[in-house]
Length: 113
Image 1 (cartoon, rainbow, N blue to C red):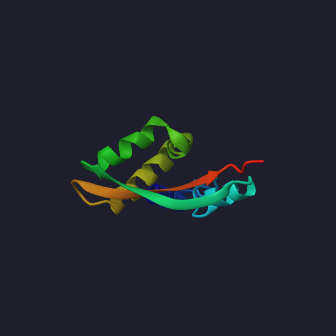
Image 2: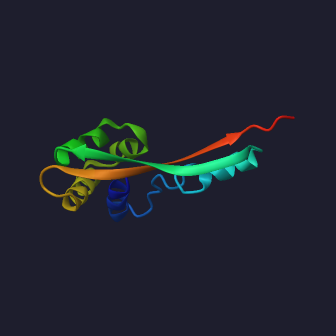
């Protein structure tokens, strides 16, 4: 998603992106767990790699207005959508490519009272 949101901020600098959403920064989730009183909190990251057949394979899901990125894209006027499309297109190679995604997680134990 960082590739997409970098392009968005070049077109609409005031865009918030997803970084303000809970759980998108390292440490968010375990901090919430600890503040909720959980014990033995363990945190980490899960990574996955997604293979794309080409740029269209990467871009098409954004056009379905799913999730924060797709909803944001579809809320913009057509010329801004095109500008974001072109900026993203310039960042990926021709042909197949892959991107790595990271998700933060935490586990904890509810204390016995």
